[in-house]
Image 1 (cartoon, each protein chain N blue to C red):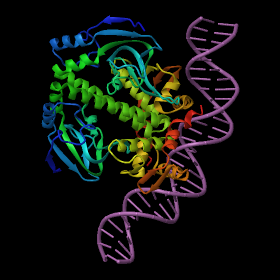
Image 2: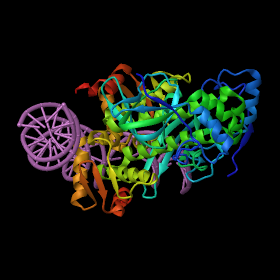
Image 3: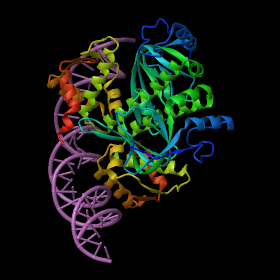
Image 4: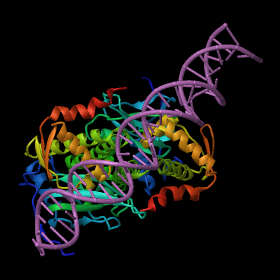
Length: 240
Length: 240
DNA sequence: CGGGGTGTTGACCACCTTCAAGCCTCGTGG
DNA sequence: CCACGAGGCTTGAAGGTGGTCAACACCCCG
């Protein structure tokens, strides 16, 4: 209710390339700084926004890890994505001026709050920013196409392999290991995202361990054979 | 290769409310007309754009019916959506300046071609247009969330019921019947969209017919009991 | 030390897929 | 005009994948 807030600047942010502004002049960067009003901290388990809440801002993740999920009246639940540092959340709220999903922090997190009307205002003046906002939204659309492909046509092993490869690739882009990762989410949340039950996720992890493709200790995962994972995603279904 | 093209005007288009411009002054409408360069016809079975092609424009469907689908190297195939008059396609191309899916006409179609750089230029000047472009992209993101929910958590009957309700609702918004519709796509395409095999789609149709929920004659579908369909989507899973 | 949340594993079963056969419909060409 | 063929659709039988239910192990933390 009383989130901690801090004044903030994009111009010296080390996530610049991943996040909002791209290839801008110093002057343009300073103008962006004006748009990014404040930072906000969210504790693990806390929500950045909830389904139904008024939409005011987009959020750039500085630190931490989020899930977004939709919940229907009849108790259905679906994780629609996991987001990490440098990624933008809140785009779902634009169309109806209120959010249509929950954003939950899976570890203590800090986000940059970008009031959307300021962002629109500024992107009318800074062409590069306008373009970037469009690209971010388009990227999210394309990402979701990939998830639809996964949910619509992949089997459990393929889904989990694709999931691990995607996670580790994004972490690698942020300077982490290509072969080791810590899952911030439960098996149930993975399952919800992948359209599987938690037992199936657990079993599939175990199978990968048996096959010496990964090592698992709790939420710590070490990838022993990246190519094997890639083959599972790509080739496996070529039997037709 | 040599698509037929026509000069076009939004200002007197009867799809105005569904499509691009919203609540604009006459002067603003005229400016939009400048952005919408030409129309283009696509024959049934033809493609409006294909995966890998350079992205230049968004397309507003004037008449006809499209599917968008992604195809991977390993032969996987996924229909990501069906689009009808008044809807916008091509948003996937913005992020990488080339399209990442195919848009195929399922019946003879005509689209308005909107060069994206003109659209960006114009939306820097016309705030309402800028806002509308953002809303269109956000709407697509939210729509895809719904598909993810469907693919991730619904059973075959629920998926098909949701699909029929969605189609008929969109057709109704365009002045068609609330209870009768003509499917423009094959069972296989429905299946691809819903993450089911065509046999399962066919079987589920048959079950709905047995249950007197719909009548089916080829691609003509008459909904006899809309509430039953709604219950299938909502309640069925409440057994938990 | 104990308890709750989380994860693993097994047995059984339901749902959907696979494979196969046959039908219907429409368009084309004889 | 009819015959034929191809594509699309339906239906059946059998099998597999993942879901469900249940028991238990593990780990973190109070």
